[in-house]
Image (cartoon, rainbow, N blue to C red):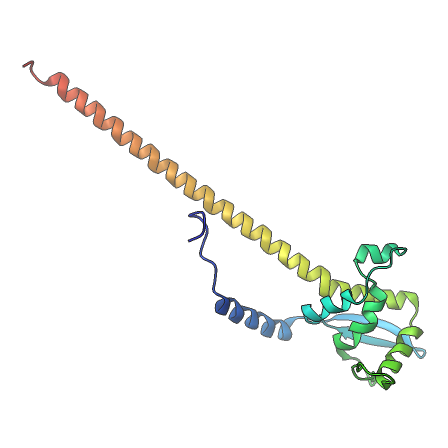
Amino acid sequence: MGEHPWEETMSTFAELRAKQEQIEAERSETEKPMEVQVTFGGELITFHVKPVAGTYWASVTARCPARAESPIDVRYGYNPDAAARIALPSSLARLEGDFELPGIPKKKEGDENQAAWDFFFDSLSAPDLKQITAALWVLNQYNPEQLTESLKKASTADSTVKRDSLESSESVSSDSTAGNRAARRRTSTTKKAASPAQ
């Protein structure tokens, strides 16, 4: 039991892990990636972008600190353009059509994949780059934050209902006990009044 009687015992790590694995399995089957369309080489390219692992996203944003002179960076909390350049290759669920992108860049000098991705990003228009940065922010920052907040609200509401129910039950029990005591006192008084004087 928790500190308060209305609090339920927390699930074990093993139970929560099993639930998380089930959630991720269902998400991979049902969650729809965000669609992003950009212009490259005079053609419209359609990306389907998915969220990346939380630890990876955290490491990406840590490597891309906000520029103090950029209001957009300050709002995001990191440099979204730099983060998109790093995270997009790992965020692609699929592409439409026959267009093929380079593979995931490797952390080594002279990597052809990295050079190709750099060329791709440097060729994007400002509106197209904004679409990519917004999609990555929604998938990796906004959606997880909203899920946590909704669970907090649900937990608080559930605890309040349980506490109120318990307090109401205790109040009814207390009133019942007090009523029983009063009834016993009245019965005792009545008996004494009816008893003949000694």
